[in-house]
Image 1 (spheres, rainbow, N blue to C red):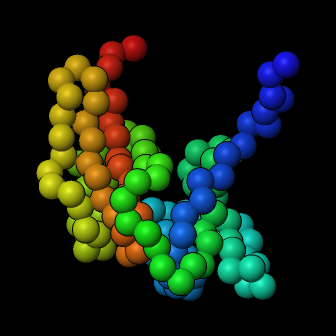
Image 2 (cartoon, rainbow, N blue to C red):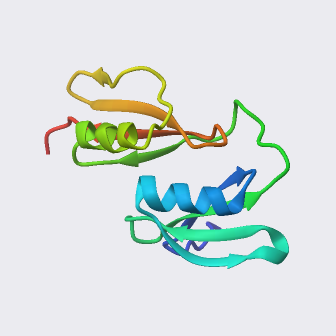
Length: 124
């Protein structure tokens, strides 16, 4: 028997300062705070993708490396890079292109959580 899924997903990320992380995700990625529960050091933010939220969990230390990488598909990766540049966001090199498939840019939140912007090059 298959699982019965609800069309929702929350990508959970550890952060060392919930206040600073909320501000960063609002200012840089344009997410909106849905709710915050200080008793457990947690909040959820809506993205621009229906049913996809980001959950931020305050932790003492954010381990680096491994884990999942959230990939945010954008219409114009150059505009996305410009937005990251305006906010001084650390990036892992230049935009990479896989001809006929995708353009990718890896970047990091202030706690070092890796994410990517992607722009599809596939015709369709």
